[in-house]
Image 1 (cartoon, rainbow, N blue to C red):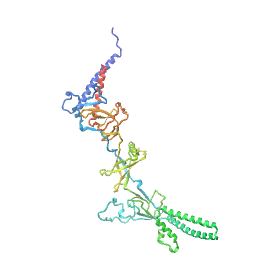
Image 2 (cartoon, rainbow, N blue to C red; image 1 turned 30 degrees about the vertical axis):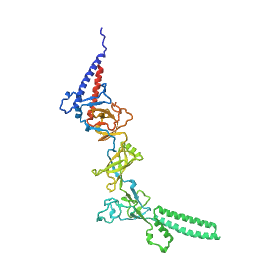
Image 3 (cartoon, one colour; image 1 turned 120 degrees about the horizontal axis):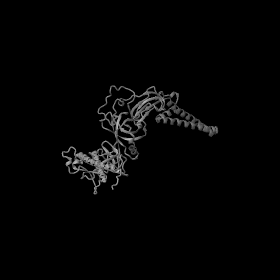
Length: 508
């Protein structure tokens, strides 16, 4: 008596047949596709080849090795262009890494800006004439320049006063200011000296009378106190003038005048210079700002508007605005106490074919620009001939050191497979066998990629179906730089073919 069939048996049998038939079709199709890739544009018929163009490398038990490795025929490798010239040895990076070019501008070095103002408030009575050789219309020559022939003054160099663009040297007289405050300070010193001289004579007379019994002790002590007050007033007046940077010669002249002051011995020439304040250049440089003219009022308390501003333009600052992703490497390197300054090459946008200028990174500003979300990186560049102008646009390439534990390979050696970055390594240079190895990429650039040669935790990286553990790539290992996409697809199809064959065996 036949047993009744369960209702689910028939659908299961139909499904099994469909899977097997589909696997056979896919098996045949994949094999044909792989063979056709590796024999593209070849004269012979791939179907007549006895040796497979590509196959999985297996162990002694016939199981594909892990990580997956593909073996190519010599003909297939030649068809893909895989040869010694396209196999690259991973190397430890020796040079500094160049970040993508950054746009920036040239700016003044704040440590090389020198405001020039009068020491005393007063009226500007005179602006000095600028010598022709220091005028801004002439090129800035290095200090070592020696003219071959005497310089001829251009007829257009008519006498004129100091102005923006003129070069000055430390100590050059720029302007004269007449100051009532200076006259008052000098007069205070003279008054203190006169009072001290008079009260000293009075004290000595009282001292003589006190010891003779003709004067009281109280009057003598009061005279001593007065002399001490006069002495303090004289010292205070003298120190005030020294604070305002009057020279010893000028102060000695005031003391001499106080000792011999008499109406019939007045010196009109000295009196004309009594309130005269000289304004001199505090440093070599170029005048970049002029805020006062003859008749104007100069006040040292108003720091926002000095008479002149002088800049030393032998060095300029470079302001760059890199994106946030480049900040960690810059900040970490600058934290090292004995770090070599990060180098960069600077090219003027107005003259991109000129020889790049060299400079060094100084610091990173502690704040982010809120609108563009960029940081401010400040560096310095030499400008000995004055060719660079403040405000010019520049393109800077920053070169930073790489961290330890990296190797460098060409970008063409890298491919993406299921969310993982993979390379194909040739373990034995005498065999056309290539292992797909997931790697950890640290930096990607147009021509080179930097991957880790040391990995602590060899787990699959997050990705779409990533299952293979990330492995280090060691210096000296051979990586393929040609037909990486084709090799990845061929290996993927061979593995799929293997899985289908495994399913077929199970369904029997």
